[in-house]
Image 1 (cartoon, helix red, strand yellow):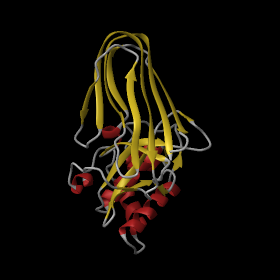
Image 2: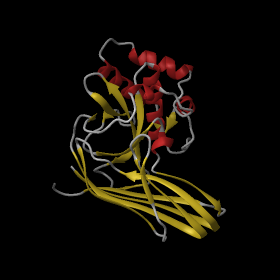
Image 3: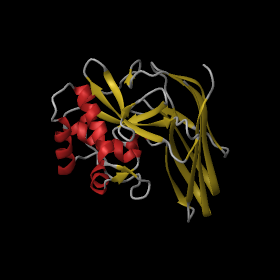
Image 4: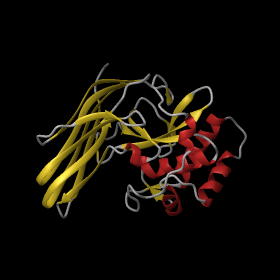
Length: 270
């Protein structure tokens, strides 16, 4: 599949900000099943963007802007060719041993309720792949998708107790449960092509877990499936904060508003 992506992040300030610092993880990497045809990241200001690679291998752009700033627009656009690999990730350099992805973070710490949930999902006998599919389906069944009650700082345990959340929360719960069972797992940020709608107000998040003889495999507990060619993979980390598309801070600039506009479209024949 050829996916055409446009991602705009627009900040507006009620009073001008004196400066802003931003870190962007908006650039995909290629691997078996994902080929980046073309991609660019831009801002609507005259500033030098520094490009680097973080500890997880993600491509990172960062910049500092002096004020006064009444608004700031960050855009990423490009085309990615994908293949359905049943979620299996191959052809990418792994910078850390798998054991690193057993490490808990504040967003992925399993409390007693998630630990009990993980053990119940693992109860049927089967291999690791089957267990992870069962776990993803169990998260989907247990949780209700709801954009209201959680935010980027909500921990897996809090979202699980609420029983409501967004894709980020579903992924964090899956990761927390998998790690409790001794399975390395990590967060993935990216995009999901939905044939019924091209305009979206947020990117997508899912998880990857390590499976013997297969390697890293993508699981989307929000939809209860493994990642397919409808998924464009951008960044990975221990949790959402390691893979967030846009993170930053500002000085001054009261009454900030944020608008996100995303379009993921069928880019036509390959």
